[in-house]
Image 1 (cartoon, rainbow, N blue to C red):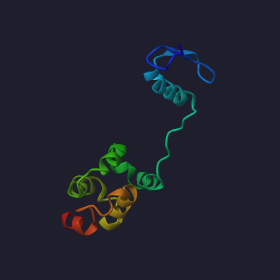
Image 2: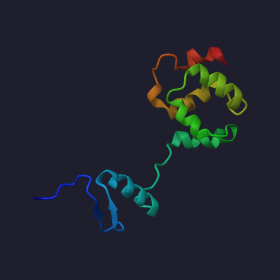
Image 3: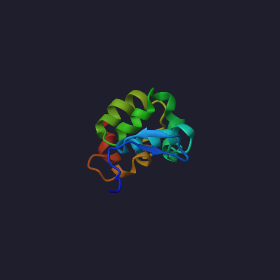
Image 4: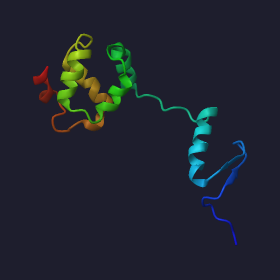
Length: 123
């Protein structure tokens, strides 16, 4: 009877050191090993994020957390919590700041309440 790949231990050879692993853990361990030896490089940051980081990086302690929150953040929170407290002194004006934010999260364009006209009243 032929063997099937299930939860039985297997050995991975060739480019990877011999590992005795379960098939469920194979992808995790191989991915981790590839990252460790440099076969997989971290994704490059978009140009919009890189520009924003250069311009406003010193305004916020954890700009990466800010980028992550942008995908679901309410527009009012963007203005009151972030723009007024952290970015207002560094930004020329809110319109330019919001355009830079739009470049970072273009998938939010057209969302209700996520436009300059709706947010300018909170500035």
